[in-house]
Length: 356
Ligand code: NAP
Ligand code: BGC
Ligand code: ZN
Image: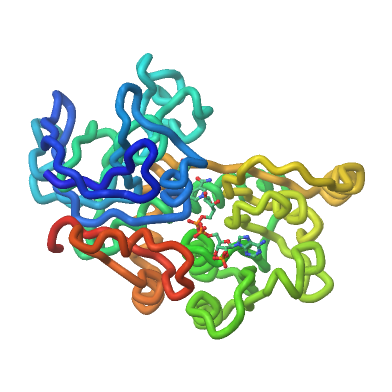
């Protein structure tokens, strides 16, 4: 079967022939339909995040997948079921407390591997196998967008944790600011609009005309250019925010978010930045967190409950939004186009392995 891999030392992915996997007991064989590409895939290709499976000098890419069960192999699935796989699997020394609790998303990096990202092959191949417990049903009519279940599940988890941190008082958020107009930022913005936030904002650093600004405004949100209005100035220029969702990976935003929040607000941090030393007024930010009851919540990955919630959420997003978000679905013959970087007309891409 054909697979999209990144080889140690290579700067771009390649299509290679690999043996088709055989499912072990408890595992399902899945025929891949589509696999999405996000900022993390670019970080993996550059070598700034993740790593190769032990003993291999290549990694099959892809962690945002949707496929069809080809061989249910005695599990509760049936051939033809549409499924999305979760990303984390137990490390080489076997399952630990996080996996036993069904919360692999809460494991620290050394207590798990991540398929297509860190230490385990991903889903960008014509077939993949997975233990049934890591597969989530996707309704057939959602199959073409099923590769968005994983990124939507990331936001389901982050918003759940953010709301949980505010659950001890009567928190009724009305304003939300998403930092970052990449694919995760825009998907999250659409989810917040669907959740009924009255006023939504999205921060980028692009000039008009730009397709991401068009999507932001079509959603009814306000575009904020960080070059004109840096994050700490957002309250004066617009309003203080009940919720901030950071999806830029720009490390200063983790701290600047505190200044963008309204009293009692919460900022969810999602970005995975490279090391960067810079100065902040730690005393002032500490005081601000305490004296105005603000929270910062870091969030990574997601578990099957977030995948199930994401399936429901995706089904309710407007069709025009999904069409505008996904700017390219590429076959294996031109899959390099799915990884093209720096082209501002591209928002979200996927590689297609089989006809839907
Ligand atoms: P992406 O496509 O690279 O998007 C990042 C966006 O942020 C880009 O559109 C970029 O603008 C914008 N940006 C960066 N710095 C900015 C600044 N200073 N001011 C304004 N805008 C800025 O990545 P993604 O796939 O959407 O993911 C976003 C981040 O979340 C990444 O760091 C990724 O690693 C992380 N992530 C985390 C999780 C998790 O589980 N925690 C899951 C998925 C992704 P330009 O395009 O104009 O440069
Ligand atoms: C993936 C998550 C993963 C995170 C950190 C994200 O792009 O969607 O599943 O946990 O990267 O590697
Ligand atoms: Zn991702």
